[in-house]
Length: 189
Image (cartoon, rainbow, N blue to C red):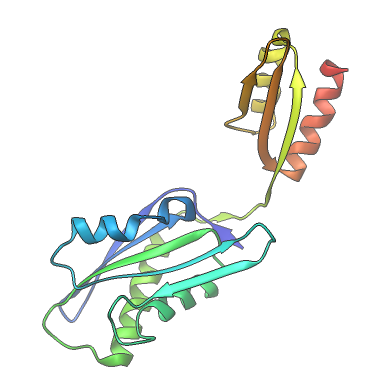
């Protein structure tokens, strides 16, 4: 499976209809449809499709035609995400009607093309499932632990500074956590 970590956009034109396509990480998706509708008040539709893993490691999918004929917009977009095995991301497509009706088949092809075009400009990354790991350290070990985190490519540690120690919480791949645990053994115990 593949995923993205940044937002990408592409514009596709089919028979004078303009499709502005965004692919975003799933945590950015929430509320984006309304924002795009406000930013594009003359747009006819803001279609979306998304795929993500829930807490039980199941793939959750959803799509919306947003007023387009049923199955002609959201489903073709979702099928592109499925075909590329994308996860934890959403595609949003803002459509401006160009005056020429596309028909249901033409519309499905146009939304698929718009989705494929945004995936071509996106930097796809191999999806790696992250695990959580927590541990405690003394204050004098903070710099050493920060160094170990950097060496193991673990970013954005969460820290809670308590009276006598520091509580750490990280998210990383199981391989990175195992490597960190080994390194921590030498300084924590």
